[in-house]
Length: 131
Image (cartoon, rainbow, N blue to C red):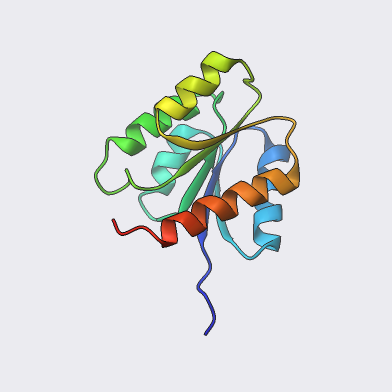
C-alpha cells in the first residue's frame, strides 16, 4: 500500500533558500507549497492543509514568530507543527522560537541532512499521536 505524500508549506523570503528547500523536499517524496512571507503563508493555508510548516523567522510583512502565533491561535491550524529555519542564532531568539510553538529551530547555514532528519522526525511523531 502506497503511503500518501505528506504536505509541507515552506515560508521563506530568500528565493534561493526557498527553492533549495522545496526541491530537496520534493526530491524526498514530499508535496510542497511555498510562500514568500508570513502573510503569503496565511493565505496559502486557506487552500492548502500542510502536515508541516518550515518557516524563516526574519521576513518582511509578517515574520515567522508572528505567523506561528497566528497559526497556534486558530483551532483548525494549531496542531500543524512548525520548524524554524533562520539566520537568527542567538539563544534568546531560539528560546522565543520554541516558546511560540516551533518543534525545531534550525540555523542557517544549515545541513541538508539535518533538515531532512528533523522533517522526518516531526512527521513520524505526528503519525503516532491521537489529536
